[in-house]
Image (cartoon, rainbow, N blue to C red; front, side, top):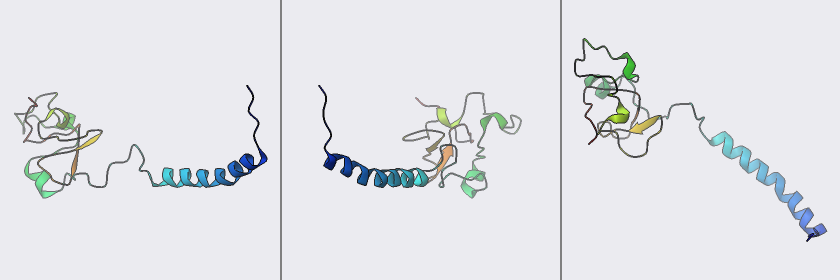
Length: 112
């Protein structure tokens, strides 16, 4: 079955289509880049981060200084990591901040 398109429907589509394109372009510009870190991420220089030896890449942990570290112990496997996770997630130790899920600190505790 073929549906005919009225001139009125065609004109309405042509009028609203540019507005939709502008809205999509504005939404894309406002969205953060997928690979950029969030604005509220925890800095390794933050005094609270320094106090627990937070590091953003667990593969760089100095084992002599941190004998409690074992491979596989990262923020992603820590009980302190809360809520929704991606590359960064909220940590119970740092309210209002997010940590790199591949990071580590001396407060690491296994998830049960």
